[in-house]
Image 1 (cartoon, helix red, strand yellow):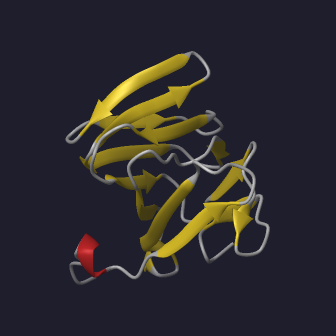
Image 2 (image 1 turned 30 degrees about the horizontal axis):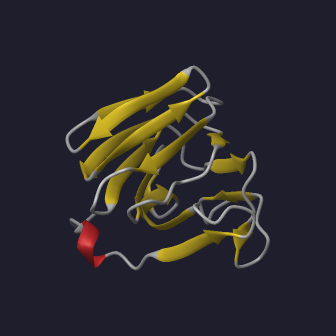
Length: 138
């Protein structure tokens, strides 16, 4: 696989139809059958004041915070995050990210499976009234 720069990815924008503060852009670097065999790699970003949306994933996820600052929101409380931090979330852990900084909160997520779904607790995503999102190979 040739190197791919995060700034060259074609991102898709998602906006929640149920929460005005849930909004993000994302693009996959690789997933099962497209550049990877046993893993998934995604880039996502939230603008200032926005959040990702509370959800669970169907695979363990390790997040690398590329830039920005914010809060990791877990059932046991919030934890501050900043550029350079790494967070590992086990499969099924409910979580959300909120951008509390002045710049985009940019993240690369690494999943331990070639096919992944996000099951949203409260959010419904436009376009399409989506309550489940995930890799294109699902």
